[in-house]
Length: 177
Image 1 (tube, helix red, strand yellow):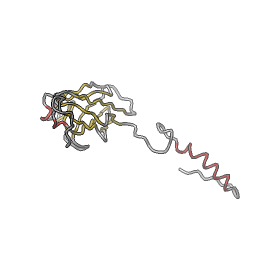
Image 2 (tube, helix red, strand yellow):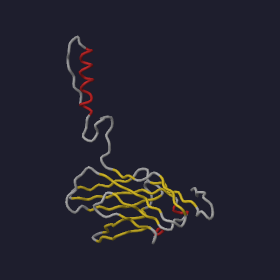
Image 3 (cartoon, one colour):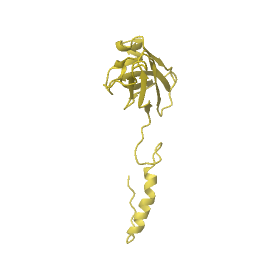
Image 4 (cartoon, one colour):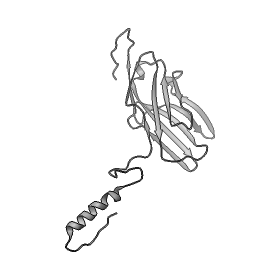
């Protein structure tokens, strides 16, 4: 939206008026700088973590959104690995037809993966037990939210890059893909 002011013969004055009105036109709720539109929802997780083969690691995550939730929202936490569109390795629950199945865990992680999160918390921890060199990868947290007519999902864009080092009794060198 532009505001034009006609001041015959006073171009310099018009320039100053427009310059002074520009910050007000740029201001948006939640974006006081007005230079870009900030996302109102997202997932936060560390960029990199390192673990030792045979030990455990915790990948902390949190998420945020601008909506006030109605009573009894349905929230699910899912995790992917390898890349942004990679395989799902964990699903806190999923709906198949009319049945709710809980706690899908990828075959590679059977007996080694736990999620410390309960609805309606907005933070938690994914824990991988008994780390192996095959666990070296990038992990992405994804959130599904359903509350009344609102249905949204969002995911970490960059994920957490997990490196695995051999136990100290062997070497401290990381494995690289």
